[in-house]
Image 1: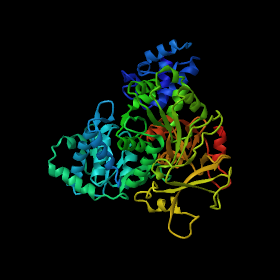
Image 2: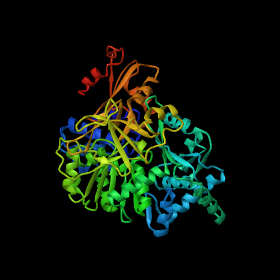
Image 3: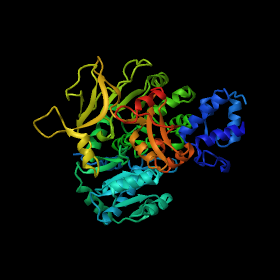
Length: 77
Length: 503
């Protein structure tokens, strides 16, 4: 799942290097439109429903935490 | 007689000197602190012998920008706002038109000023200087020379030729608009506004000047929170924000995520929105959550300062119904004209035209565009009287409310920003590997769809456009075509392309 999510991020923002970032949100790699798009992509791909309460910066800072978010939201890998 | 906006600031300083006027993530400015900062900035401009001259503000969004606006206004000059995240190319185009005498920039962005070239001053340096009594007197002298029809600011909107248009707004226009807002929505000293609009977007004029008029408090909510809607609601709760004026996209997002009942936001009493169509379903979710709050749909182009019509929600709007844009604001006249320049009848569609004291003086340094949009009132052949043709199609419903139908031309609204699709196409065309392109707005998904023919790959084109266009103008979906469909007139067949995106 990690690799797939990295692919999604690169698709959203091909101009940024996500591998080099410690915190996608603090480093400004994802803006509000990207977060909404990413959530839709995750929900579709992993057939899950992300709770609005879980859309917080700490759940989007790295690929690992995004994976955790998908699992928590009932996502299937 | 109230005739310049700086009187709002001076009156509030007198009444509430130590009350917080402007709050951002790092700083809070009381009314007297705002005035002191503004006087420092004004004194620098007065010392440069600038009066009725253009001054650009290029600072990260925050309370310091507002001091800069006030400083420029106090000195009898006028401002424009340059977003620090705007691509260099667009900044250059705006500066070519605006030709600022000086740019006020914050320390953090100084590099950008050096790159641009020309005269600049650092905000932090200006406010640290010591002012003598004579200095503040010099500022007062400059201020006393301002009249109400002098320019307060110029805001740049998207232009079809790729050149942004600078809308000129005077002190009088802002005062008349702000007085209407204050009286209509009963703003007072206890009003606490949560700002969303960027300062280069006209909606922020309501936030800033209503705050100053009423001795209220304005919270500049950190931009990052708009990515995380629950954080926004928590901000409202924690800072007891009671008034917001946001674009529908943001309100809808909160509603769509079912967050409204997840946070204690009963402090919120006034929810105003403008900038694009507010979907009734999401509006109804807000009304259900805050049944005692006032909800109002405001409408207007930048050319009429901020708004020229409004609708305070006073009845049930069905989910599939359009939220009316309502009625003309005080001291503003709306004319809905059909193709024969006659006033329309009920249910007949026509172009919304507007006249009144909040009307812009035209486009800065652009007489041709001004003459095309600001025209003689066709219903008046006795004397010179200008109206602005908005290019928006509307009609009156059975009960006399104005209903918005759409745009006449290719100018569209996307995430609350006004965009000429032609400007995006011009940017795409500027790449040498592009043969043809056409940008469309998919209103149902509020996304920008770009069709293009050329050898460049999608990723490279995306990167290229990133250097030319502000974020909100970047296409969301790209379609690379073998050839562009052409209609009988030899023009790109937009209709055919629209069908492809289901429009």
